[in-house]
Amino acid sequence: MSELTSGSSENLQVLQSKLGYTFSRIDLLKLALTHKSFSKTNNERLEFVGDAVLGYLVGSRLFLLYPEVQEDALSLMRAKLVRGKMLAEVARGLDLSSCLRLGSGELKTGGSERASILADALEAIVGAVHEDGGIGPCSDLVDLLFTDLMQGLEAEVLKDPKTRLQEHLQAQGLDLPTYEVVDICGADHQRQFTVSCAVPMMGLQCTSQALSRRAAEKAAASEVLILIAEKMQIAESVGPDAAPINDTNKSSK
Image (cartoon, rainbow, N blue to C red; front, side, top):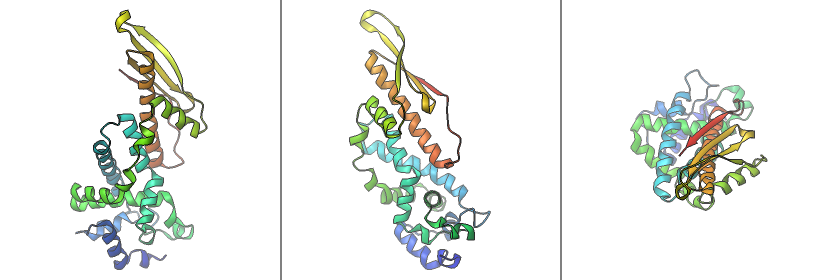
């Protein structure tokens, strides 16, 4: 793929047709497709905007689509949809690789098919649409690209939070969480249980209160799942060389 091919007017016209949006400022689309290896003026700032816009719009859609799903499950659903691998798949469906502007080194090493580059470019395109036309066209774009992907997610996330946490950790080859009753207070007929849920190998621990030990365990597990979803998003955004995030503690009532 040459610079001429990737930046051709024909390719950009085809891409806009796939996006269902025509740019008033075509320079914004070109910038969204420009990798840092190609120019110091690249898509990183637009990616920053697109990441925020995409997270907001996907979260809003999930909130409306799954009214019975709680915060921890919604966070995991959003993390699954906006993680790098998923965004790269969406980008491949748009054939973004044929439109990217990459430096010669990235071209030679297959950068046009690299998941991280494709995902970043897709976020940058969302950012470019926002800067060109506002939130309305972005909303239409998210509907176009993500509606099908949002269907049928509830079967997994509607499981008990303790079950979801256990299955997630087992899938990662990590030790199971530990639960500990930190405090019991109140009269016999209105006991308050404070329970901690810890995942030492991930440096995570949360505490929650409820009227029963089991309910407190569920609430604490739910809080840990939210932190895991946040870590997943951070890890995807900063890349594989990022330092691990540890020693995270959170309390809820």
